[in-house]
Length: 423
Ligand SMILES: *Cc1c(COP(=O)(O)O)cnc(C)c1O
Image (cartoon, rainbow, N blue to C red; front, side):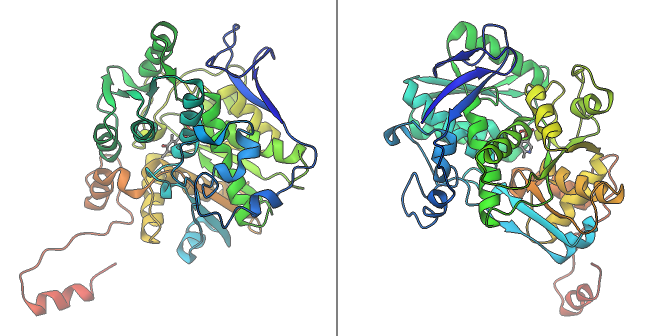
């Protein structure tokens, strides 16, 4: 077993190391040489593991993620192991019998970002770096701050000024990261990060870091394992910086080449209408044209210049997938529905369910097909928006599924009246 970096643009290869970009400017990918006889039994055999790292839903798949790293560098909190849920109301809403959601909000810091972070921070330890940095719409910074604190590494997080949900900001501050708000939104923060990597020698743990994508591949691996390695027809996910879309494509391609799956699920990447450069690229072809002032209520996918668009496009095409967009209204209604099922998620996550509903209505997904929607983050990440929706206080969004808080005098007749009121 061995691994090296390969440039996604010009194909040049490099030994593993601190380098993130190729000399030509392209992003590097990890390329593994797997043993011929790799079989899922090694992963299934670890399902009862009690201790780190193999009780983690990331490191359980070590041979497909970072085969050669020595266990003493691995920093793990039992990531993954997230639930796969169905609900009668969810199926009715989407208009399909076979609807499942995989809840990545059940990760240690409440989003899928922990899957990439445990691999990225473990690699940072192996490389012996002492300071790490990320630019983030919130969840990456929450995750990095937590892992860096455990590894006792200095940590700087760049956040778009005023654009981060409260739950995430609270995490980054509490875990002790140096929190820096950058004027001009996420794309400006991302630009500054690349400069900091060049000139200050900080190790970046954004999704430009190829190890993050290796960790995120395990969303696919684990969901297939939960289904006894039987792929669904579709996997539907929110698309912002396109790290997951890229990672999912890589995971599926590797499984296919290893002969571990015999069908390829189709990927549906869902963008928000106001932050939809990837959707436009899908429609119009050519090169990605950035959206200058991206806006959506779902701050985790409020990105106008996604760094991973090339490999994400390859992934969608290779799986015979689609890219679709949904409105903030559709996102918030889908979120309210997922919440009402007792499952719950943050706004960006619900883009997957809203997208599924739309694709069923459009006839792209057939009524007999089976789908898995990825819920990327936890309900508690953005309590402010949740309460505002139910109070009808979000401008431009009708609270179709509002659950209104009632106020009564402390009398039993008054309480009794509430029992017969909707919903
Ligand atoms: C980061 C994030 C996304 C976007 O994922 P990409 O891989 O950047 O496309 C979506 N939802 C949530 C909750 C996130 O934290």
